[in-house]
Image (tube, rainbow, N blue to C red; front, side):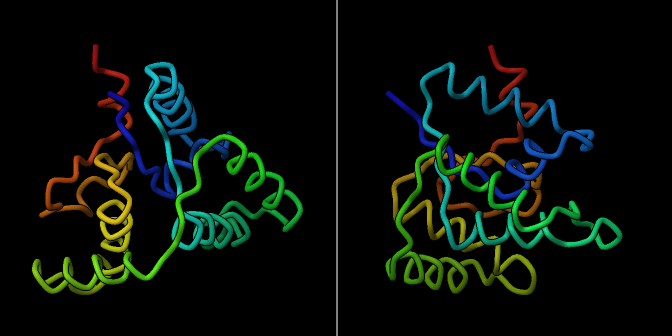
Length: 152
């Protein structure tokens, strides 16, 4: 049975940024999942818009410093590689239930939207470098790329 992995923005950013110390790890984890016939999925509003923000932000403020053309090219390549999930109202409903049930507050409220996406679309796994940002994940399996590489 194919497992569906939602790719967090940090995975895509590192997989596109050759200067990142996590570049190879991100690429290898994605390649391994795909080689195992797992499905890697993305969501436009959260992942791709956040990708654009970080990619075009200056390096001095933790961005990649890319111009719009380079960023557009990378986004097009991402769209060609991964399944794009539909953004819909049900995501908000799942998000609201989740943040209310688990009393999510502050910065983690944004990350909780990924959980709403996953619950809406039946995605069971989240690939992210920020595993500590996801606690009480209601049956969601949060996976660090190193775990993918280390698994048999």
